[in-house]
Image (cartoon, rainbow, N blue to C red; front, side, top):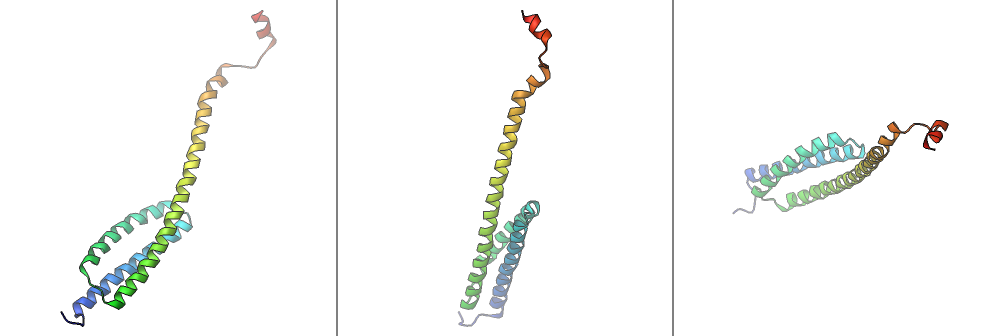
Length: 134
């Protein structure tokens, strides 16, 4: 094998690094969505992000990188992972917030179920009620 990569190898390396840059761009956008609390759009983006990660994983298995390209890949991966950690942290906080809201809603429903039957049957107390019981 030659010490110098072929033009095909260079193109493959460029394609791989461009894919990592695309992934970084996607995760940066997702982080912006998380910070803006645009949860539905974030979830939509997450689906295509996972597909892109899978495609990148397959491409990564077929391409050998020289030292410069390997360094660039490492830098991109580090930035991708930083954003991913921040997104996950925001999602966990949102999940916890939703859990609390669900808990409050369930308590309100339980209270309503417990006291609602009494509200419809008992009227205000009158003197007639007292004379009937004696």
